[in-house]
Length: 253
Image: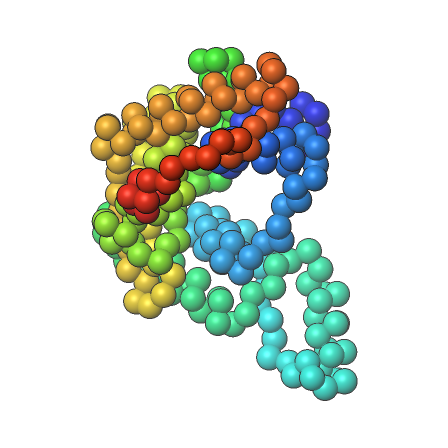
């Protein structure tokens, strides 16, 4: 990692600081915490984003695995030839490709989602800014419309209002919303397009209340304050050194 990028904060880095600052140090300073290989779910999420937001790039980044019996000698040879010919591309199964197409269709068939995605704008935008604490920050916005709307696409097991609210709490999507809202100049709104990962691939489109946005803002500001203190003291704590009570209701939301 370039040293100039070491302390540029992103949502994923804030999440590590929020969980335990020592995890941030292990990954980004010491280099002892390695990034896991992309899981099938992450590959699917990236492919869906590309299919919806940058369809012209899909064929340049992804390819579909041929139906080859890799148990035979001939099949193994054909598979190896295929991998050589498609080097640099991410290989999707036919089932994954069909699922991506079905999920994309559900999104574009949803009136509100189609309206938002049909607005003029740019996709996969890198945004960089300084927080009020003068800490450099960075984020990649799924889509930023010309009239200042931030659109974020999420795959989820449950896109219902209650189900997606639980995902927002678990994955701190409210923090992401506030973080990006503050980082994008003249932002006018933040919308989630949530699509389920199983048939019939139901879709929900949501915005957060001002109260929840402020909660997210307070959380990321606290994370940045923690980060500044850790850098200043060169102390990166874990989960705590004392016996602590568990509040099951709060953690189970």
